[in-house]
Length: 203
Image (cartoon, rainbow, N blue to C red; front, top):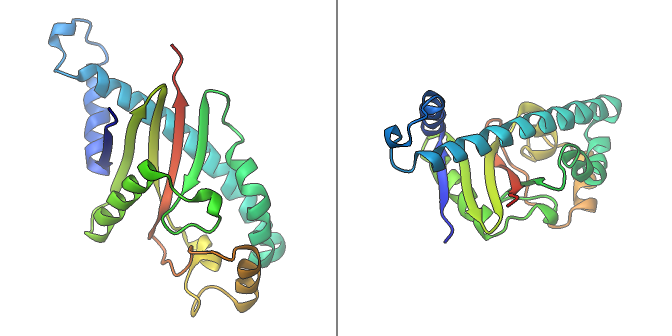
């Protein structure tokens, strides 16, 4: 049976701290019920976070360079061609990384059912004034970790409002490349979507 867990940032901080304090315990009887599964969750979240951090750094630096070179008009087609290869830079046969969103630009980033459930829970939390944390679930032979993406200022030129942020020339390029685009009218700090890391667990 599949169980989907969604943490707030406070919740995951408490989880990681409690797991860290338990790492030196060797007597299984002293561990609380389901402690091992909690430890596994924290481990995978930590591994996912490391992969996401280095991947985001690579994407961000490359995109900033393209923006400096030719502005948003050059960045949009660059993202269309290079976002997938750059996202895959550090993955391997045992770890897969992708991005997804309820308001996707590229149809290839549309969410599956489990991803959609987590994204919708995140959006409800965000709309209620809370900060969503990690999503975590497992299925046969795989462990899944999701981490929310919040829109940064530099992204407004391609994902902001039509009235204020996206220039007409940029919008023309977006519309020519993404006829089904939903990824616009965001504000800085909005919930943009999520990273999804899949671990293929070896027996």
